Length: 329
Image 1 (tube, rainbow, N blue to C red):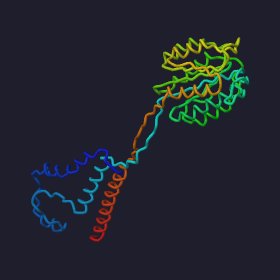
Image 2: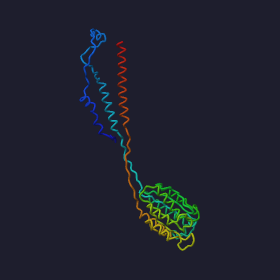
Image 3: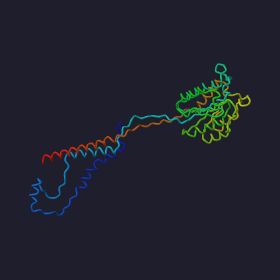
Image 4: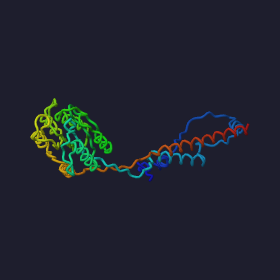
């Protein structure tokens, strides 16, 4: 629809009439030279002498054109606009970052599948995490993988198809054979620093002990807590193993507890799927609907019309006056 952004300016339309009524033309009497042969000069010039000053009156065409031009200028000052239909945008209120352990141990085929078959750990993780991403259409999701060092694979994005593709392409050992959980937490904190959403959630999935980090995991957790990042931890390794393959359950529990998150242990694929269903429930969708109506400014059209009208009138008046002078000559 069309509207005026400053309609009150149209109240100024009668201003010229008020000025004409309140401020009449200035008149004054002054001495003049007396000519004994004034009548002969006036007759020769073809002018009929009158008493007092002569105020040139506007013609009707001039009055109409100037009135229309004034109205168009005031219309332009009132800022006519074309208001288009409203556009709605859904703004996510939560950023979720997935941190996946891709150390070499994730290639071990010891993870119980849904039908009892043994799967590689990474294969079970791919399917369950991809399903979780698909269930979160209203959140921005990012992806980080870590081994010897952490690497960001996908920034926070609403393009969940991209995230699922990156998850499907993950390969055990692609980030190195060891586990750097503390450094992965540090990278996640840096990624969250650039977000403006009120809720920041980090979900860490690992199957081993931290052996490669330069930053201790518990130190990184203190920073995450100060930044308002909630960390949920998921363990899928063997707590009874030794060395790097041993799942450090105590550390994962402390990480989750210190940031207000929860710790989960996935013993098989069905348990792992249930964990992500719980995570989906405790982080319900939180969105903010934004709506605005685009406005297209139209003030230049009445302004151009006013200029064109005055230019056409004065051009026509000049041409008519020129013809009259040529005819009189």
